[in-house]
Image (cartoon, rainbow, N blue to C red; front, side, top):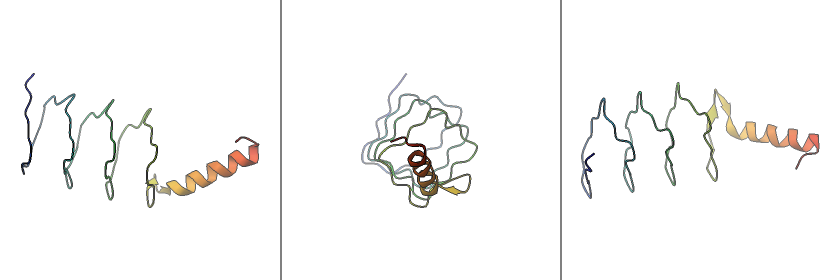
Length: 97
């Protein structure tokens, strides 16, 4: 496996049928990029801006979100804030903390 170091550059990358496992992206702008038929399994996203992004036909099995902003986010058309509010109300109604 080789390592390609890109530092302080502007490039458009087109990768197909490639194995880029264990890659690291830090302080990188990928705005407007398209990801299709991509595995991001076991990846970590920290301090990432997904604003205005669309995710379709994705597997989210075992995905964990924490300390995130959910304003305007929907799941299957349902606002996430409404889902949280409904869940919290159900927990209070059931006597669970």
